[in-house]
Image (cartoon, rainbow, N blue to C red; front, side):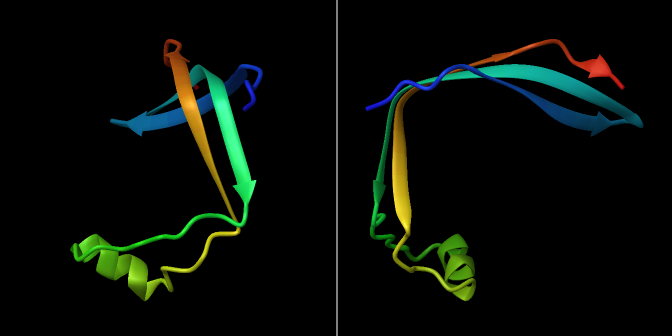
Length: 79
């Protein structure tokens, strides 16, 4: 398992004619990955039907998981 260094990112929102930039930071611990992927099983929900229409399920090329994710969001700033 790996612990990745903190990632500082930006996201954007637009509402009522105003665009804002929101900085955020993500820290992860217990990152795991494997080549060969995992088996995907789709259920009977209408979302599953939509995924089937896109060609799923197919075997994934790789799969991954994260044991712990922490996110901190900063103040939105108009741009």
